Image (cartoon, rainbow, N blue to C red; front, top):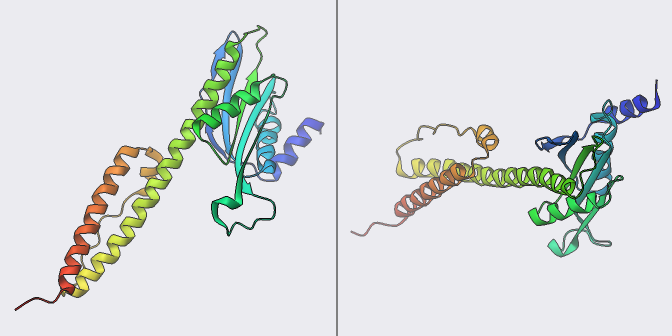
Length: 233
């Protein structure tokens, strides 16, 4: 077995890092650029993702450069995390892989987009023609696309988690109201398809649902409160 194939086998057999987002391919005068984003909460995880892209994903079609940058929160030395946010610090880094300034360009985009706990890898296949400064625009555009996809997904996850919490509260309030009013258990409401909602990343729709749930929660609380308040004769 060839060394390159052996490396690919060893890396893939350890459990592959999960690709979170991949950008559209940019082609310019036979050069090709594409970005991929993986979760990374440590230097080791970032390097594992870079190695995975280089030796597994692109094993049969080696890129000329695998530029990368990473940012993650980590515990400060001597801290245990119980002291709150002050116990943590942001660490970041980058690697050019032969394309000078390539890694720092990616890191700059990650900083501007506020991406944390991730590694972004921009792969370039050189087509034989020197592109000049425009190559950095392509690197930045690819990186920006996956960073914005990542932030959009994070926002959707947070919103759906809030929606789930409100639905649980509504379920509890409905049971409480039915018990106190003597009307019996209300018919269960139609289950929300959270997975489909999350995949859609339709933040506007999720926010509308959250507002509707909050109003329902407020109404039920008022109705329960009125039942708990003694009626004046």
